[in-house]
Image (tube, rainbow over all chains, first blue to last red; front, side, top):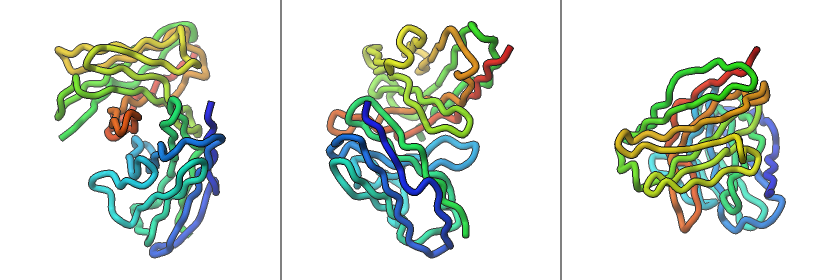
Length: 106
Length: 121
């Protein structure tokens, strides 16, 4: 199984900050990676798919990059509604999620 | 608009089975797959399996082989997930999600609201 590891596990930031979250796959997955946002008690929301494609309706401050084993999600200027948990998910071989990164208000 | 509406919370005893439904609307049900993903308290999301609503083909995570059954009723635009031989570790929120097919792989673009399944004696 391909394992997904995110870092950091949690991060504190302020409104307006630029934040980067990293996801590493245990083996190469080309660009078959997605990012999701989840708020407490809610279902996940697709933000980015195919490593860098922005899902329809998602603000352009979210961006994704990477290929192979190393990927990043960047939020260019944090907004109050962005404080949530973020998960990466590989789609190369079945579907494995990372352990999540909790983005908290500083 | 695309919506996936799941059935309500369930409480089951160890060894029992649970069946959760996922009713789709706002798109052509038979043109997409429906996936099932669960999340135990404080844990990461865990993919369980999927069904292609067009032909009923299924694929399950090896972890759930033999315990998981996913079916669909095209006349009702509804998918069902049944998990048997329940144990306490199966306590989780279960989500259905629509598969977004991109170059032969799936991402999950719309999600149901989740169904809490509690396994307790």
